[in-house]
Length: 366
Image 1 (cartoon, rainbow, N blue to C red):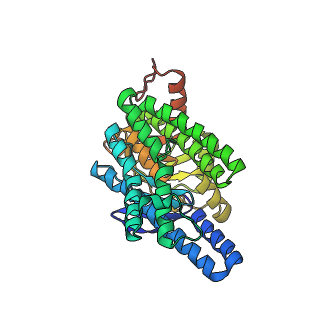
Image 2 (cartoon, one colour):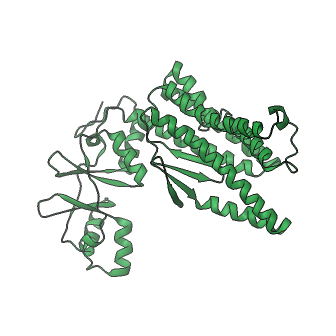
């Protein structure tokens, strides 16, 4: 995720903190310092850090359960509204998604019960808790219980929404279940925004996040089923202009003006790709260093994808690495095309208009 700082790795998963989370902590600290001095600010920071440690434990409940099904999670990012674990793929079976979804809230249940027993109180004590006067242990127990209830709201893609999708998928299949769960999630998002206007403005941000995330999950699901059984060759641009490694930025500008391409593979003397030059890097370097700069100094060293690789797998890798385009090669390592987000988006538009359209390498049609 952009604008995030990597803190370290736990069981192979990078733990990141978003800059907005840092800003959020500073804002809380300054507000409490203004109201109650250094002691109040320090107490608030300790409480918030412990809460987000619980959130991180919640996310690792998801991560470790997913790993038991062979699904890796490259990273998890802490945001002001919680944590986001970036799993490589959606589970193949609804039962697996159900178990992964409930694993996170179960971690918070364990934490809350442990803190309650440690405090020698019953679970019912949380309902009558005076939060302002409560001890740190009592407030942590209360907050973990609240996290369980909040996360189980069936607002996709929150945990409760994923539980809902898994249950629906058992009867309707994953594509239809995702569409229904996404609509329900967006309806809850609207409710959160309306409540935020009258009660707590923070609910507005939660509502907006849920609405956007639900739409994103819907798009990802649509792509997954659209790309089912397709290879990279079906989604690549086959007619691609390339640049020799000896070319200058002046040559690249000429190619840019003569072609609708935004990204240009750079090839060696044998015509094998050695890098990729995108328009943004071209223009930035042209401004700073001039037109005689060799493209070899500007290009991004790219690991090509094979034309026979599954399209879904190649696009997932591009999304993880934040790439807009990727070089495509054949079994002999020769340049055969370029895989771009724009071309995939156009294919999905065609699929939306004509779901019966068959995409294949070289020839496309009904």
